Image (cartoon, rainbow over the protein chains, first blue to last red):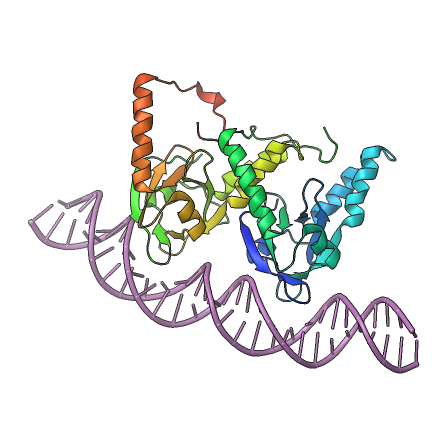
Amino acid sequence: MALFLSTYVNKVDRKGRISVPAPFRSALPEHAFNGIVAYRLFKYDALECCGMGRMEAMARRLESLEQFSQEYDDLQTLFSDAEQLTFDGEGRIVLSEALREFAGITESAAFVGVGSTFQIWEPTALETSKKVKRDRLRHNPVSLPPEPQLAIRGSGE
Amino acid sequence: MALFLSTYVNKVDRKGRISVPAPFRSALPEHAFNGIVAYRLFKYDALECCGMGRMEAMARRLESLEQFSQEYDDLQTLFSDAEQLTFDGEGRIVLSEALREFAGITESAAFVGVGSTFQIWEPTALETSKKVKRDRLRHNPVSLPPEPQLAIRGSGE
DNA sequence: GGACAATATGGGATATCATGGGATATTTTG
DNA sequence: CAAAATATCCCATGATATCCCATATTGTCC
């Protein structure tokens, strides 16, 4: 499984191109599609990204939900707003205006490794969010449960 | 499982390089990634370090949490603040300015084995913290639980 | 106490990565 | 079908990360 760590801030150029950090490109599993999928987070004005394989697995899990249910419909939105972004020869992607606008990205973007996926944030918004979360962790420690069972995602369990 | 003991103090050079003590390098499990992962402790201005395998296990455990819960979001910060640090040919890592600043490290750093992981502290801050803990233990002794129950905690205990 | 090995420290060269620009191919629009 | 717009591809450069080599210090063994 892919593991994304750290945070990198890179520039967006006039053509909407931005370098995906080299460690993230290395961490992506091999796939016929050479790039990533970006979709909008529900809770934050930021994007979540992963390889195509993970997206395909998510699609299979969507199929396990009750068709026509409210949550099925809701999750379909995730897919319809998602964009596949191909790497160019230098490891850059092009962020569409729609994605940039959703995340409030203008000149730079922060690539935020969060374990099995990574996120793309506007850097100032990221710092604000991180500060809140760090403060919360400092005052209300949480723990990780022991080594898992696999969880079904997106089911709201 | 890895076992890290003792405390070593090494120098940071002008490029931010520092030697990881040889016993710690030996104690790390084999992994394709030749280095360590450093992340920020919640309760102290210090870093905690482990091998990549342990970080991967932590990522799997994160996946077992409810995906949109607040504690899930908060713990993601641990990953986004973490950095993978590759060993150079001489067993050194480069501590980024962000990590050094967080831990208050300038000229030297203390490597502190704490069992299954190790920590990196600014040496004076470490001494202060140790003194506080020794005083507390003297007045309020604690015990270890029996063998199978040790849990990894997201916060300093 | 000396020799040797292991470890830590220091410096410089090279490779990689991020950034920037232009050309070409493809798609869209009129 | 042609022109315009956009996406993709290709190439170059500067900064920095990585790699390589040497020396000093410390620990171990005889």
